[in-house]
Length: 67
Image (cartoon, rainbow, N blue to C red):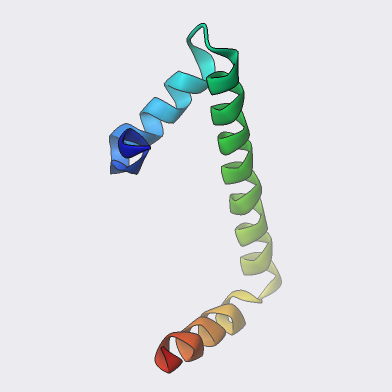
């Protein structure tokens, strides 16, 4: 978990651990993590292309002001 928190090294290690190694559980975990990253990126691009992004930013700013 600590290695994944490092900005550039973490991303590279996620890819390495998803492809290389004997531990199938670790490989499956990092493959699932990459899949979730891709899904979230696709959803964000969909919101931006549909024009919902300014509305989302406005809601987040309002939420942050109330904290």
